[in-house]
Length: 405
Ligand code: ASP
Ligand code: MG
Image (cartoon, rainbow, N blue to C red):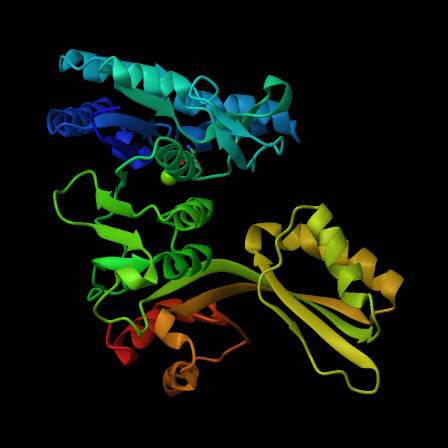
């Protein structure tokens, strides 16, 4: 292929109305004029996916996963052809493809399928003949021609997988924010847009509540060394580049940003006899029910008795409690406690690695603001504190100031 390939992904809010679709189409046409073979990946328009989900919940108490996937895939089945039509009206030759037509192959796990490969021949043929190819994001095809979806926000991952499969020169993620910020600008007025951020840092921020990118998309981009460019579809401007740590020349070893997540619940199994297999007995049934336990803390056992606490998202709190109550009985635990109204605040940056002073500074900052830490968890480049949700704004602001972000 002679022209370099550019993948451009447009999120739901960038396509929320017909006029936004047309505006995005202009941007795509301009990229083609610059000499690129353009592949566009679209999300569903606006909150279309949420509306489909609520429709499903109104006809069925527990919609079957495969039917739900087929239903949700229609959101992108609408936006992709509309985008192709908008391009036609600008005189741009374009064709839209559903996930299976674009060769996006996945495993069979409905609602959270993983891409196992991309067979891009059809896309390549279309690009050769000078067309812009618009691909429905978020969906793929599993075994036995089953339509699958990649999990909420999954069209980022479609875009990255296609960029890798097509050996694209660049992958742009157009969204409703200008880039990746040092903290949520709605909470911190002085939050700054980062020119560059490392894959590992972005992954931690994304998992810690900064919902700008689908985490899996970052993993794939990192594995293949593909730089991602996050930018606003409403403003010109440089946006943020997600790249390897080596690609960040200035500010290498520092705290990069602060993420937060509200709607966290804590569950504690109290008075558990401390013996091998206890943690497995608690967490296996949760995993079977597809409930993700997050910050997990086991207290040092005292006279053979220990407490096990962990957090889940508030939405899973009630179900998790029910499961634990039956487990508690079988493992001889004393009781199960649940607390709602918590939040998670995370400080992320490659500079945390090997610098014990960072943790101390976080705890000091929260303490001097009278914010109690309920639980702590860390990774190599992240320190997370669980606090009460009513203090989350204060905590994020204070930490942003303390680390001079
Ligand atoms: N439309 C899907 C969702 O709302 C996928 C995406 O937006 O990336 O989750
Ligand atoms: Mg999205």
